[in-house]
Image (cartoon, rainbow over all chains, first blue to last red; front, side, top):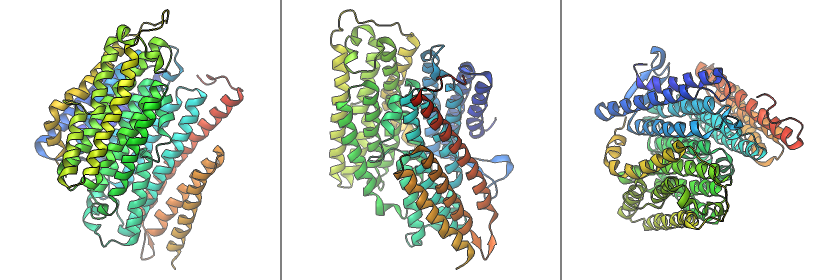
Length: 474
Length: 99
């Protein structure tokens, strides 16, 4: 376990298996201890990468090209850090959230563990085929988590999600097969010097198919159809994990390939993701503004916020654009986990999931409402939140290259986010109808939601440290 | 045309058929089969294209084995979900039959 790279993949596998053996609903303590250890390892790794460049580990002593290499540069280390710390918050929340008889609790801990193992393995994987395997691990665990609640609606949403995920990873695998057929290798480091703008047409097709598959898995408009039912229907801790982390995994991979081996081909297609991203911002925000129920509102907001990630592709010539993308990943992950956690508090307190049912929340659950306010600040991009930094860098990059429509889209999207956040806040300050029952909610739930939201704002003060870390390249 | 290329072309056709099925068909069981067809297509391309001077390459074969394991796991999950969905729609099985 001396090597953080190995520990980050093995630890979650270990406690997930332990939780599964212990039986349905048990193993929360093993999970919390494991995630705490992972958080510490991720911290060590980030310090190591920040100080001395990339970290590398040859699995079983067999290095590439014969064996499998795990490697982490600044981007991997940053995302590992985000994943473990966010998972720690969500795990603390989930331990209080699931009551003893809740059917969704039965397999939550093992599936969450396998999900984290898949995510961590994805962030340190170093060749196209291992990335495919980890992508599938993440997808299967995520589908299991959606289905674990067991209602008809959730299972239908899980199946829909599964088919979308399988189509996406199938397209990606087909692209990998073509790349191997042309170059005889799947190692990202070996491929990087081989792919040039004069590459055979097969490589262009392969790159296109891989990008399409990853875009389907990242739920970019118009492939977002599976996201709102899956994220809006799952239990609150599951929605938090999925919206915060899982959709970011495929975006991370797309960004890594776009900037790495496929960089010579990428500029040809840079405007397509940006156009779809802009469409996602408008359509997702509009649906969030119109949503009747709270969790679908948050899920549609995820569709919109993912759009920002894709606005950066035409701007990648400027370093600020890369920083904007990573900052948006962090800001949205923390804010969205906080929002779903807060929504879970309201559902437990009032027994309903409607925006109208929030009336009176300001007086009864002030901490949770404050969490929604802070997370909303990040989504709308108000200073000093991390969301503000992301939008600032994005607009700066857009204006530096003279692509002002992107800046306009970013500003309009922030305004629309403010509309749906204020819709929720306004309703919460209305007077509650007399006699509406409010159940007691564990305080741990309220405070974890608050901590996640506060982190999304406070991260704005540590933007420079994060930007320095992600500048460490292989 | 070498036999490797023939395999790869058949793989492309299978992949396209499978993808079309996955996207266009409504029936769950047939979609699961379509996904398997799609996977097989990708595997055939992987093995077929990677012939160096008529000598088969061992690395993609190892990859295909891994890919088959993944596909079996995904198929099992999809079948379990489809069965549970069916049971819930008909109300035949109680929700916690294996709990």
